[in-house]
Image (cartoon, rainbow, N blue to C red; front, side, top):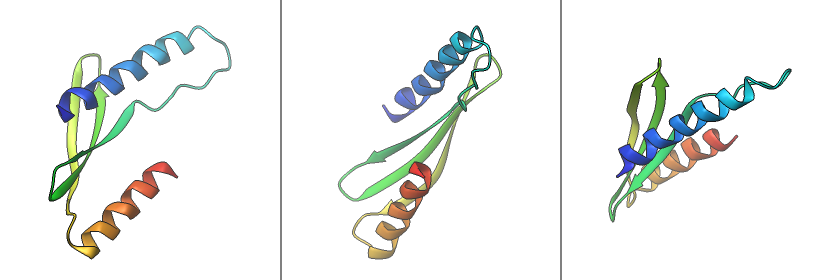
Length: 84
């Protein structure tokens, strides 16, 4: 499920950039997306982007044990950095 949603976002950004290319002096949007898959014990952080015209790449950034305070802090830091 996470892979499908993660690949849909760069596809949508690709379409947005195609529309933006028709407008002068409008900057393109970076074609990548972050996603988090969470279960009862772990969270996995992914980044997805489109390479070329048809290749989607999904890379796991990290896995975090939610019951471990250090892992939880690290996940929080990663998400804050993405949002910033």
